[in-house]
Image 1 (tube, rainbow, N blue to C red):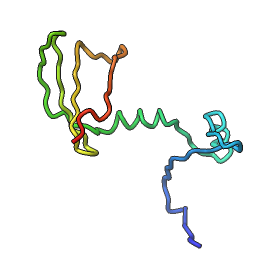
Image 2 (cartoon, helix red, strand yellow):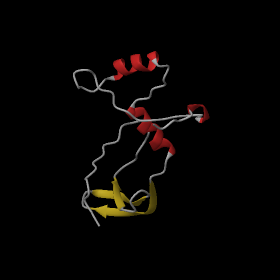
Image 3 (cartoon, rainbow, N blue to C red):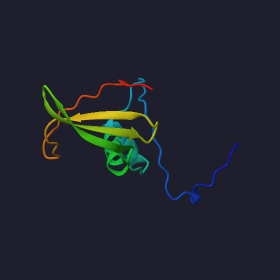
Amino acid sequence: MISVNLQVCIRLEFYAKFLQKDGTMARVPQLLKIAEQFDLKIITGGALMSTGYRREKLVQRIVSTRLPSQYGEFQMYLFRSQTDNKDHIALVKGDISPEKPTLCSCPFRMFDR
């Protein structure tokens, strides 16, 4: 048996999926009840990812250039992923603003190395 002294832990974070008795995944209302029962703090996966995206830089912009085409002028950006060192291209047409939604298409593994 392994004994752990939890008094030395200042902060403990973990990710878990809770299942209900019927085997389905517990949803937020059930999770809030569990958190209240055991005095736990809770955050949704979406909120966790949103926080991480705002704080962490997972890609580095390498270069950008204008790209004229028969469909108009685009701005092309080359990014390098900090996690797997792969390159990714973003083509942008028009202005991107945080005040309005931006249409985006993300092909998966288009340029595998």
